[in-house]
Image 1: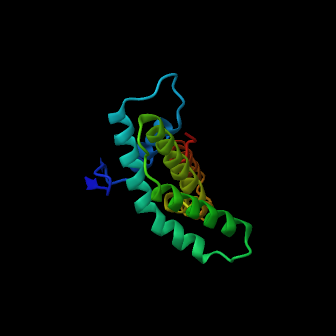
Image 2: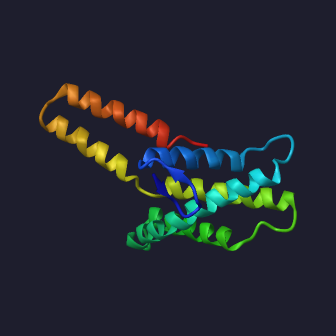
Length: 158
């Protein structure tokens, strides 16, 4: 078990982390009829803050490697800047402002997850290409299945 900055304990896999974060993002941007409990807002906010703090250095490095005029580069830098702004803000004085801040953190996390390349996707694509090179239809099918599972678990929209 690894401990993430937010105090979250997860399995040693990107998929488990991604599932946990996707769930936190869903909780953060949900619009229930009533405001959530203050403790739930604090827990979700803490998780999302920890995730952003861990992910931002990689996101900044990724955005910094892109040409300044590339549309993807401009979008990635914009997402990083927005995440930095949200992290700098506080939850405010009351429950309503804390919920709004939690939602902003959730949206920032989701945008960063979308903007960053996924190492597991790259690995699975390389696995598929290798199976194609060998003309191994079973290996290609297996790689495609694993990619589908990974896409559903790690990249599902909140």
